[in-house]
Image 1 (cartoon, rainbow, N blue to C red):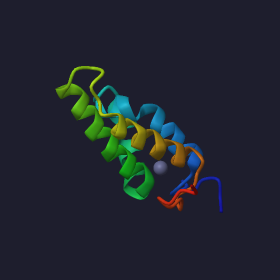
Image 2 (tube, helix red, strand yellow; image 1 turned 60 degrees about the vertical axis):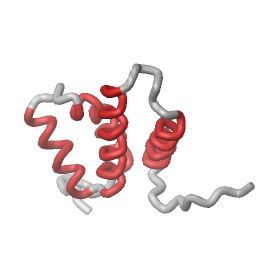
Image 3 (cartoon, rainbow, N blue to C red; image 1 turned 45 degrees about the vertical axis):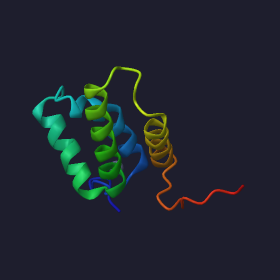
Length: 97
Ligand SMILES: [Zn+2]
């Protein structure tokens, strides 16, 4: 564990990714920033899954009127982001009732 080793999965790093993910998907980032995100996505299943979900949501948003994103979709995305923020990759789909 040396400080020079880039962590493969670091929740703090993932949060940084998320701050720029929509810009990345909109191609608003410069090349260096894009590379950084792509490299992170290669190693981080959680971010890759969320990126795919976000990309799909963004694509849907472009095809639909602004407020027509299905509630279930945005709820699922929010849930995925929350899960990532808490650094918990093992939460199951089951919920106590
Ligand atoms: Zn990540």
